Amino acid sequence: MSTEPTGALTLRNLAMPRDVNVNGDVFGGWVLSQMDIACGIVGGERAQGRVATVAVDAMKFIRPVKVGDVLCIYTEVSRVGRTSMAIAVEAWVLRGRIGAREKVTEAVFTFVAIDEEGRPRPVPAEVRHP
Image (cartoon, rainbow, N blue to C red):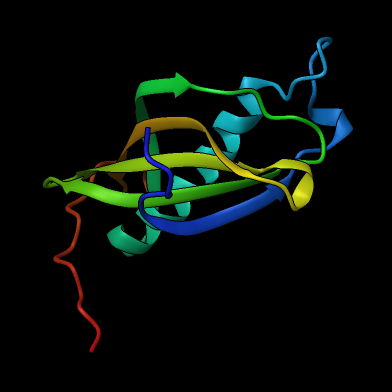
């Protein structure tokens, strides 16, 4: 397993007591929603507009997230098609806000660029800034 995150830091959030299950671990669904938000940010930037999640592939929960951990989401656009894109995402935590960094989850999210009526639209060519 890698010791450094892959991709750009896109989102950070603190795991709170309201986010846990009966065992005291943060719900996997909460982690998944944070990953979806981060991928939506990156997907919307790359598509230059509205996007929708259409698939989550290869979701792998590696370690639990605990209350007080800072969840850090790293993203990278890994593939761009005509109307869709794949975004590789990793979730890491800083244990107890300041402790060791550990990878807790990874996945690939697929997004489709959509128009105002919710229909697929082409993903524009990538704009490179100097």
